Length: 434
Image 1 (cartoon, helix red, strand yellow):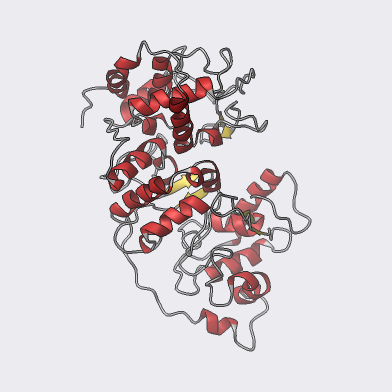
Image 2 (cartoon, helix red, strand yellow):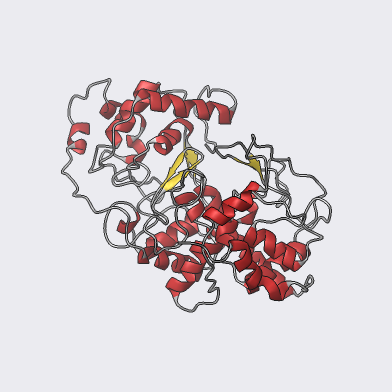
């Protein structure tokens, strides 16, 4: 379809009434803005190694190089303290800075284009009146040519940006409210929608079957969030179980890993029960992207409890390293120890996420509803590439799981990333985040 208006023009029409607004210190508006910032998970990306909230400096990996998040504190020189409301709205919803330079779409402004005027005003009030100024320049993003030419992002916006905006922030219907949060502030598609040749999201709205059908973020496979109907993954979760996962990072089906831990910790765990249920209601309204598959009979439990198990087999490796927590039936003891049977991460087409957890371990986030930060230890010091491959292959084919076998070279590639993340190989078991 030929676009009659560019995204910039659409957003400009929507924000014309904001042009002459000034900072508003109304406490209620700033309070609302603090909640909107949680909905948008702003602090996760805009807090770098210095741990100064919103001061920027976090490196966001991309195929073209690291993109560093900007300082969005109220500092007038290095942050956004001298932005007008209109300039703030243009940066958030169009990806254009005060000086006219384009932001790279690592900033999810294609999704934020959906944010309503009222939520933009509240967010602006929060940042200018509640966020302390940090007079510090965030690291400069230096991508390789031609991606270093920011003006080219405008062409990218025209070619690949969403066709329109449909804000409905105050919807009383749960599905409509969930749609607003998922497609807009939650920017769930940034990680869970597949990307095209120009690294663009292939869809921005739920009526496209590619939207939220699964993707990849920093070498982690991300599952499909389309939870309607029946099938593997989220379709087998109830609306309440999805909301529980968002609030706590765990439920009867699994536990959070990877980048999603930051989303849980800084965003969804801090939302109202109503909003988490609305998100879940919207996800359950989206038809599943994968057809249901028959669950084959499995003799994994019988093999694990047999008198003799081959010492070099995946079964033996599971018994020696995993069975104490996940049990021989693969059901675990949720929410403390997640089940491995029908586990979304275990059954992912790409085993990189599962391999990462085996090698580096994982720790659950501490949330208001689930304060215990239980951890799985790392096994990179204990298991070779061949052993991890055998173990993962067994788990991915046991208790009804149906995922491809894992090869040692796949483990080797993930191990290289784990070593890079930890700077040096592990000498023994540790309980730190991967």
